[in-house]
Amino acid sequence: MKRMHGQTLVELMACLLIGGIMLTSALPAFTSTLQHNQQAQAVNQLLGTLHYARGSAVMGRKTIALCSGDALCRSEQAWQDQLLVFDDRNHNGQLDSGEDLLQQLPMQKGYSWRWSNFRSRPYLQFEADGTTRALNGTLTLCHKDTPATQIVINLTGRARTQAAPRDARCN
Image (tube, rainbow, N blue to C red):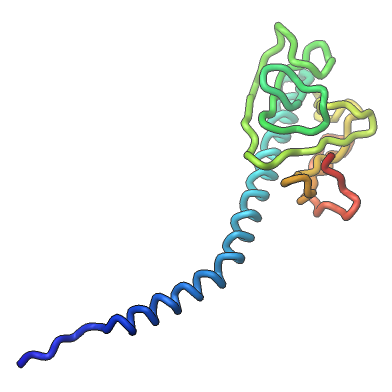
């Protein structure tokens, strides 16, 4: 008589139980890693857009503006849904007829940026020399009204990242 080689139902259930326990213990760490990667992607996307706008201003010797909106700039300091990068010929921070739209970038779902600057403008402008037209300030990445990280833009137009301080706001 030949002997059968295999596992019993009890052994299979024990393996599934151990696998389930390992999976549930690893799931929170995976979720945290996924959220961290999404935040990093949002920060890198905005940094790339800022560098593109500043570079376009310098290379084209013109004023380039950034704002949030679909076809027109919103008058809010909360940037969400889409970013517009355009040639701001009349320096008003609005995408008007006759001004060229250079980029229209969708933002990551669930994330928004809060733009705060000394002059309380809802847009950011770069001059032909790369400076910010006295619109230096801080962009705070918000996820579900919780500040995550910040991009600080100085008067010369350079951007740097930092962790969001305790007093950072999203609304």
